[in-house]
Length: 426
Image (tube, rainbow, N blue to C red; front, side, top):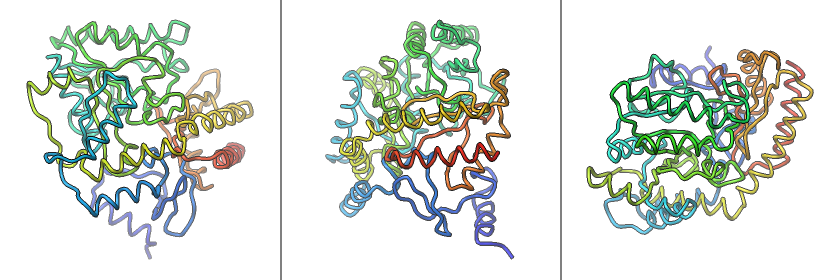
């Protein structure tokens, strides 16, 4: 006789089709969330060390109340005048450099990146894009073409060229000149596009290089890479869907870690704490040049309820000092992980900043061979112990830690203790 979970899994496969994927060999049936905690159908509690969508914590009461209040008043599209979307645009752009003063709203990071590609093509006249070689930027047709995490170079369309991620742990350049050397690959990619008769439109980078493994981006890389694409007539698009909104602790946006000014910034996932909200922010001159060629409209993007959710998220980040919490708890987690690495040879590298950390698991530190199977065992064992996380990187051997921003020192210590037990057991 089927269990309830088995019945749900069978229904899911039938109704949603086989393309949908699930985490864990024995998928979780979650029914409730609160703060850093998730609860399954049997009432078991899990510490969430993975999900950045509930940025200020699962079901934060301030956000829930804002959504409910606005839902009871009005929710419609942005072709009518309404204060909230303007209030939110002002508040959002105030967190960015002054030059980035126009916000165009959508529902998902995919849509935000899709619009950024449209803008770049329209403004530059180019059609080519440069990305890193294990990137993720979304799942529409145009954006999936610049998403390379499951692609090899020969699988990419002619207008997309992938460059090596600026990985100083495993990559081809590891010395003091790594930033310049990795940026030189952008120039090579531009030349590849030109040989194909394609002018470059933009360089698109997730500024913490997360899907490639939250690599320790060498200082100056973003600046050099942006300079290269601009010299070729293209734009620099900073994908902040994952590193944005204070997650790095040191800065509110990932690109600020390198003191570089993007031409376009995209954002999504954590903006509405689970309510669909995303944005493409750019300079007014770029927005005006785009508007001369076309128009933009998004039925649900920036609707009154979405704007209310976005404002509430910014209120909570500020009121609860969550960027500062990310820096403080992130440093505590990093120190704890470094101590574990002294005891466990298979923890090859600990990196990241704030509450976006990565632990690279290897067979040994000399060869640095990716320990893919071992990483999978760690993830499954952590789940059995009540901690949720997952792996990233080309070899799926890098443990990604990206908890809600409300995580406490007590929560962090709990995770470190459980991880220590799992590593010792395995």
